Image 1 (cartoon, one colour):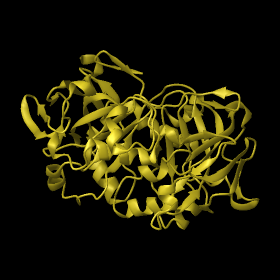
Image 2 (image 1 turned 120 degrees about the horizontal axis):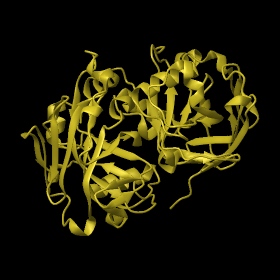
Image 3 (image 1 turned 180 degrees about the vertical axis):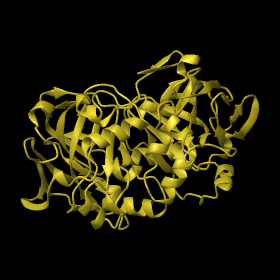
Image 4 (image 1 turned 90 degrees about the vertical axis):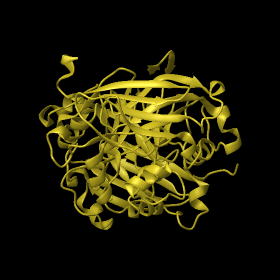
Length: 225
Length: 229
């Protein structure tokens, strides 16, 4: 897949939940003592400008008809690695991008309350927009001091700064690579700040991170079969 | 890209079913699901026949986490890109069947489940997804819901069942999954494990067998002792 001018071949997308204090509070989640990871499968990825498709099985079901935006700073792996030390973490990162962790919120809460996996609510097709480009790591002096925001139809819904991340990128990468091998091109999304809320068919989503850019996606209802 | 028997596949995802055999549901005390319970393992977990399962030191040396379990499962491989596949057409989109061992860090999984966290980390350690020894074509398996399935540790029978006890059968499982996600050629779907799950330890030899497919053999070694093979 091509992000801006860069071709990447991710083998997985790993996301961090509850990594901004204010978001953990708004979700009534305990503040984590270690990073909480989950996975989105690759079918969820779309790039800048492509529509987010609101699935009919959510839209037409009272129990599941809420889908939320979550803007996140993502980083892309430069090479295959395991058991990295935080001091060397940036040697393994190719660059940064904007990621939207679109989430079927009612379904996620439904599943979580039954002690079920978080998988299905996170991995619908088009629920992982990324872009508009991959900013090379050399071009970002401090990834923990970037304004991050999301607008729906021009109205600001999320507005924060990456300095409020609970677990910073070097810690995340050390922790994660202690578990699993990361491959070149893998995408790691670092969590969303507060202000998450619903999206609806017809909405125009604009997500921006300072020094990276803006991604724009229209939400459309899935066509009938 | 991985080679399973003589077949090269290029999976983009692994989707597993939990609690899909009645005997396993009884032994775990979980509720009978009303729809398939699905989760994902990441591709770093894949190994094939005769490759070692590496028991992470991180788990082994931590009393809160030092239990890792075997789970033998019937898996199927997706033939082509598809979405919204109705149950009656499902077999048109399946390349074939194989044996899958959904190795699981059980204490870690239990701890995460109780605290309502994702199931990811306990399921996706490197080497925790054994697959093989071959992919048996759909045309070579008359009835995937009538196959003996078993797992031995060091020659001792631990799991023994038949795929006829699957709660959600392959057609309804695939119809369900493709309502959510686009499937790609090579994607792996593991259909859940029967009763009898239990721990593995470094040094164990795991043999997982499904009738008409074959036996998947993997030895367990402690992380850091790979060179002693």
